[in-house]
Image (tube, rainbow, N blue to C red):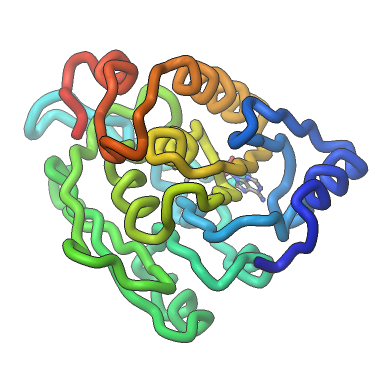
Length: 243
Ligand SMILES: C[S@@+](CC[C@H](N)C(=O)[O-])C[C@H]1O[C@@H](n2cnc3c(N)ncnc32)[C@H](O)[C@@H]1O
Protein backbone atom coordinates (compact mmCIF):
# COMPACT_ATOMS: atom_id res chain seq x y z
CA UNK A 1 0.00 0.00 0.00
CA UNK A 2 1.36 3.37 -0.86
CA UNK A 3 -0.96 5.79 0.86
CA UNK A 4 -1.35 6.26 4.59
CA UNK A 5 -4.85 6.64 5.94
CA UNK A 6 -7.97 5.29 4.38
CA UNK A 7 -9.80 8.62 4.11
CA UNK A 8 -6.72 10.40 2.69
CA UNK A 9 -7.31 9.75 -0.98
CA UNK A 10 -11.02 10.57 -0.70
CA UNK A 11 -10.32 13.91 0.94
CA UNK A 12 -7.60 14.69 -1.55
CA UNK A 13 -9.89 13.79 -4.48
CA UNK A 14 -12.65 16.02 -3.08
CA UNK A 15 -10.18 18.86 -2.54
CA UNK A 16 -9.27 18.64 -6.23
CA UNK A 17 -12.95 19.03 -7.13
CA UNK A 18 -13.56 15.39 -8.09
CA UNK A 19 -16.90 13.77 -7.30
CA UNK A 20 -16.46 11.04 -4.68
CA UNK A 21 -19.41 8.69 -4.18
CA UNK A 22 -19.45 6.14 -1.39
CA UNK A 23 -22.03 3.62 -2.61
CA UNK A 24 -21.63 1.37 0.44
CA UNK A 25 -19.15 0.69 3.24
CA UNK A 26 -17.02 -1.21 0.75
CA UNK A 27 -17.58 0.51 -2.60
CA UNK A 28 -16.32 4.01 -3.44
CA UNK A 29 -16.23 5.49 -6.92
CA UNK A 30 -14.56 8.70 -8.04
CA UNK A 31 -15.21 10.78 -11.13
CA UNK A 32 -11.78 12.09 -12.01
CA UNK A 33 -8.33 11.52 -13.47
CA UNK A 34 -6.75 8.50 -11.80
CA UNK A 35 -3.27 10.00 -12.07
CA UNK A 36 -4.40 12.85 -9.86
CA UNK A 37 -6.34 10.66 -7.41
CA UNK A 38 -3.80 7.85 -6.91
CA UNK A 39 -2.32 6.47 -4.74
CA UNK A 40 -5.35 5.10 -2.94
CA UNK A 41 -5.41 2.65 -0.05
CA UNK A 42 -5.76 -0.75 -1.68
CA UNK A 43 -4.28 -4.22 -1.66
CA UNK A 44 -4.18 -4.49 -5.45
CA UNK A 45 -4.85 -2.65 -8.68
CA UNK A 46 -6.73 -4.77 -11.21
CA UNK A 47 -7.50 -2.84 -14.35
CA UNK A 48 -8.21 -2.69 -18.05
CA UNK A 49 -6.08 0.26 -19.08
CA UNK A 50 -6.51 2.14 -22.37
CA UNK A 51 -4.53 0.39 -25.12
CA UNK A 52 -3.82 3.36 -27.37
CA UNK A 53 -4.84 1.33 -30.42
CA UNK A 54 -7.99 3.19 -31.31
CA UNK A 55 -9.74 -0.09 -31.99
CA UNK A 56 -13.19 -0.46 -30.57
CA UNK A 57 -15.05 -3.65 -31.29
CA UNK A 58 -18.63 -3.36 -32.39
CA UNK A 59 -19.84 -6.80 -31.35
CA UNK A 60 -21.68 -9.52 -33.19
CA UNK A 61 -24.23 -12.12 -32.25
CA UNK A 62 -23.23 -15.10 -34.42
CA UNK A 63 -20.03 -16.68 -35.69
CA UNK A 64 -18.79 -14.66 -38.67
CA UNK A 65 -21.13 -11.77 -37.83
CA UNK A 66 -19.17 -8.82 -36.53
CA UNK A 67 -18.65 -5.14 -37.00
CA UNK A 68 -15.66 -3.09 -36.00
CA UNK A 69 -14.94 0.60 -35.95
CA UNK A 70 -11.67 2.46 -35.85
CA UNK A 71 -12.03 5.33 -33.44
CA UNK A 72 -9.32 7.20 -31.67
CA UNK A 73 -11.02 8.38 -28.52
CA UNK A 74 -9.24 11.02 -26.50
CA UNK A 75 -9.04 8.63 -23.51
CA UNK A 76 -7.39 5.89 -25.49
CA UNK A 77 -3.75 6.62 -24.70
CA UNK A 78 -1.48 3.80 -23.55
CA UNK A 79 0.59 5.00 -20.60
CA UNK A 80 1.95 3.12 -17.60
CA UNK A 81 2.23 6.24 -15.43
CA UNK A 82 -0.43 4.75 -13.12
CA UNK A 83 1.98 2.00 -12.11
CA UNK A 84 4.18 4.52 -10.29
CA UNK A 85 1.25 5.10 -7.94
CA UNK A 86 0.05 1.50 -7.59
CA UNK A 87 0.77 -1.06 -4.86
CA UNK A 88 3.07 -4.01 -5.57
CA UNK A 89 0.17 -6.27 -6.47
CA UNK A 90 -1.20 -5.42 -9.92
CA UNK A 91 -2.82 -7.08 -12.90
CA UNK A 92 -3.71 -5.26 -16.10
CA UNK A 93 -4.91 -6.14 -19.56
CA UNK A 94 -2.12 -5.01 -21.84
CA UNK A 95 -1.71 -4.48 -25.59
CA UNK A 96 0.82 -6.89 -27.10
CA UNK A 97 3.18 -4.02 -27.92
CA UNK A 98 3.09 -2.88 -24.25
CA UNK A 99 3.88 -6.22 -22.57
CA UNK A 100 7.64 -5.73 -22.43
CA UNK A 101 7.36 -2.22 -21.00
CA UNK A 102 4.92 -3.36 -18.35
CA UNK A 103 6.96 -6.44 -17.41
CA UNK A 104 10.07 -4.26 -16.97
CA UNK A 105 8.28 -2.38 -14.20
CA UNK A 106 7.52 -5.51 -12.19
CA UNK A 107 9.91 -7.56 -10.02
CA UNK A 108 8.59 -10.91 -11.16
CA UNK A 109 6.07 -10.50 -13.96
CA UNK A 110 3.63 -13.15 -15.05
CA UNK A 111 1.68 -13.17 -18.29
CA UNK A 112 -1.84 -14.52 -17.99
CA UNK A 113 -4.20 -15.04 -20.90
CA UNK A 114 -7.76 -14.07 -21.69
CA UNK A 115 -8.79 -16.57 -24.35
CA UNK A 116 -11.80 -15.41 -26.37
CA UNK A 117 -14.46 -17.85 -27.50
CA UNK A 118 -15.45 -15.71 -30.48
CA UNK A 119 -12.60 -13.53 -31.70
CA UNK A 120 -13.25 -11.21 -34.63
CA UNK A 121 -12.38 -12.88 -37.96
CA UNK A 122 -8.60 -12.62 -38.43
CA UNK A 123 -8.39 -11.05 -34.99
CA UNK A 124 -6.43 -12.44 -32.07
CA UNK A 125 -8.23 -15.01 -29.92
CA UNK A 126 -6.10 -14.09 -26.94
CA UNK A 127 -5.49 -10.95 -24.92
CA UNK A 128 -2.55 -10.78 -22.50
CA UNK A 129 -2.87 -9.77 -18.87
CA UNK A 130 0.37 -8.78 -17.16
CA UNK A 131 0.37 -9.59 -13.46
CA UNK A 132 2.80 -9.05 -10.61
CA UNK A 133 1.79 -12.41 -9.11
CA UNK A 134 0.91 -15.81 -10.49
CA UNK A 135 -2.55 -17.23 -10.15
CA UNK A 136 -2.84 -20.66 -8.58
CA UNK A 137 -4.45 -23.15 -10.94
CA UNK A 138 -5.43 -21.90 -14.39
CA UNK A 139 -3.33 -19.10 -15.81
CA UNK A 140 -5.61 -18.81 -18.78
CA UNK A 141 -9.31 -17.97 -18.72
CA UNK A 142 -11.68 -18.62 -21.57
CA UNK A 143 -14.59 -16.22 -21.73
CA UNK A 144 -17.20 -15.04 -24.17
CA UNK A 145 -16.06 -11.91 -26.00
CA UNK A 146 -19.43 -10.73 -27.10
CA UNK A 147 -21.93 -8.06 -26.32
CA UNK A 148 -20.67 -4.85 -24.87
CA UNK A 149 -23.82 -2.88 -24.18
CA UNK A 150 -22.42 -0.78 -21.34
CA UNK A 151 -18.95 0.21 -22.61
CA UNK A 152 -17.16 -0.25 -25.96
CA UNK A 153 -14.36 -2.14 -24.15
CA UNK A 154 -16.51 -3.95 -21.60
CA UNK A 155 -14.92 -7.14 -20.25
CA UNK A 156 -16.77 -10.30 -19.18
CA UNK A 157 -17.55 -10.32 -15.47
CA UNK A 158 -16.22 -13.81 -14.83
CA UNK A 159 -12.87 -12.86 -16.30
CA UNK A 160 -12.55 -10.17 -13.64
CA UNK A 161 -13.87 -12.54 -10.95
CA UNK A 162 -11.01 -14.90 -11.89
CA UNK A 163 -8.40 -12.12 -11.53
CA UNK A 164 -9.88 -10.77 -8.29
CA UNK A 165 -10.02 -14.26 -6.75
CA UNK A 166 -6.52 -15.06 -7.99
CA UNK A 167 -4.78 -11.92 -6.77
CA UNK A 168 -6.59 -11.02 -3.56
CA UNK A 169 -8.39 -12.49 -0.55
CA UNK A 170 -11.86 -11.86 0.84
CA UNK A 171 -11.91 -8.49 2.62
CA UNK A 172 -9.02 -7.02 0.57
CA UNK A 173 -9.58 -3.81 -1.34
CA UNK A 174 -9.10 -3.54 -5.08
CA UNK A 175 -8.69 -0.35 -7.09
CA UNK A 176 -9.57 -0.07 -10.77
CA UNK A 177 -8.23 3.31 -11.92
CA UNK A 178 -9.75 2.87 -15.42
CA UNK A 179 -13.15 1.70 -14.25
CA UNK A 180 -15.19 2.07 -17.46
CA UNK A 181 -18.60 0.53 -16.82
CA UNK A 182 -17.49 -0.95 -13.48
CA UNK A 183 -16.90 -4.61 -14.37
CA UNK A 184 -14.08 -4.96 -11.82
CA UNK A 185 -16.38 -3.46 -9.19
CA UNK A 186 -19.10 -6.01 -9.92
CA UNK A 187 -16.51 -8.79 -9.59
CA UNK A 188 -15.36 -7.34 -6.25
CA UNK A 189 -18.89 -7.14 -4.85
CA UNK A 190 -19.56 -10.74 -5.88
CA UNK A 191 -16.36 -11.98 -4.26
CA UNK A 192 -16.46 -10.01 -1.01
CA UNK A 193 -13.72 -7.50 -1.82
CA UNK A 194 -13.80 -3.75 -1.23
CA UNK A 195 -13.69 -1.65 -4.38
CA UNK A 196 -12.42 1.77 -5.35
CA UNK A 197 -13.17 2.73 -8.94
CA UNK A 198 -11.92 5.80 -10.79
CA UNK A 199 -13.29 6.95 -14.13
CA UNK A 200 -12.85 10.30 -15.79
CA UNK A 201 -15.62 10.15 -18.38
CA UNK A 202 -18.91 11.33 -16.82
CA UNK A 203 -21.03 9.10 -19.09
CA UNK A 204 -19.09 5.93 -18.25
CA UNK A 205 -19.01 7.00 -14.59
CA UNK A 206 -22.84 7.26 -14.55
CA UNK A 207 -23.10 3.84 -16.22
CA UNK A 208 -20.78 2.29 -13.63
CA UNK A 209 -22.61 3.95 -10.77
CA UNK A 210 -26.02 2.62 -11.87
CA UNK A 211 -24.55 -0.82 -12.50
CA UNK A 212 -22.84 -1.02 -9.10
CA UNK A 213 -25.98 0.22 -7.35
CA UNK A 214 -27.94 -2.56 -9.05
CA UNK A 215 -25.30 -5.08 -8.03
CA UNK A 216 -25.24 -3.92 -4.41
CA UNK A 217 -29.02 -4.35 -4.28
CA UNK A 218 -28.64 -8.07 -5.12
CA UNK A 219 -28.29 -10.61 -2.31
CA UNK A 220 -24.72 -11.98 -2.12
CA UNK A 221 -23.12 -14.86 -0.27
CA UNK A 222 -19.53 -14.21 -1.37
CA UNK A 223 -17.82 -16.43 1.18
CA UNK A 224 -19.90 -19.40 0.06
CA UNK A 225 -19.96 -18.95 -3.71
CA UNK A 226 -17.37 -16.40 -4.75
CA UNK A 227 -17.65 -16.86 -8.49
CA UNK A 228 -21.40 -17.25 -8.81
CA UNK A 229 -23.05 -15.70 -11.83
CA UNK A 230 -26.13 -13.94 -10.53
CA UNK A 231 -29.39 -13.23 -12.24
CA UNK A 232 -28.22 -9.63 -12.68
CA UNK A 233 -25.57 -10.80 -15.13
CA UNK A 234 -28.08 -12.93 -17.01
CA UNK A 235 -30.20 -9.80 -17.35
CA UNK A 236 -27.30 -7.83 -18.78
CA UNK A 237 -26.58 -10.43 -21.44
CA UNK A 238 -29.96 -11.99 -22.13
CA UNK A 239 -29.11 -13.31 -25.59
CA UNK A 240 -25.69 -14.79 -25.00
CA UNK A 241 -25.45 -16.52 -21.64
CA UNK A 242 -22.21 -14.60 -21.11
CA UNK A 243 -19.68 -16.68 -19.16
C1 LIG B 1 -10.57 0.04 -21.50
S1 LIG B 1 -11.75 1.04 -20.71
C2 LIG B 1 -12.28 0.04 -19.32
C3 LIG B 1 -13.51 -0.78 -19.61
C4 LIG B 1 -13.89 -1.69 -18.45
N1 LIG B 1 -12.97 -2.80 -18.32
C5 LIG B 1 -15.29 -2.24 -18.59
O1 LIG B 1 -15.48 -3.48 -18.51
O2 LIG B 1 -16.23 -1.44 -18.76
C6 LIG B 1 -10.75 2.27 -20.00
C7 LIG B 1 -11.49 3.41 -19.33
O3 LIG B 1 -10.52 4.26 -18.72
C8 LIG B 1 -11.01 5.59 -18.72
N2 LIG B 1 -9.84 6.46 -18.54
C9 LIG B 1 -8.88 6.78 -19.46
N3 LIG B 1 -7.94 7.57 -18.91
C10 LIG B 1 -8.31 7.76 -17.62
C11 LIG B 1 -7.73 8.47 -16.52
N4 LIG B 1 -6.56 9.14 -16.66
N5 LIG B 1 -8.36 8.44 -15.33
C12 LIG B 1 -9.53 7.76 -15.18
N6 LIG B 1 -10.13 7.08 -16.18
C13 LIG B 1 -9.52 7.07 -17.38
C14 LIG B 1 -11.72 5.71 -20.07
O4 LIG B 1 -12.69 6.75 -20.05
C15 LIG B 1 -12.32 4.31 -20.23
O5 LIG B 1 -13.67 4.29 -19.83
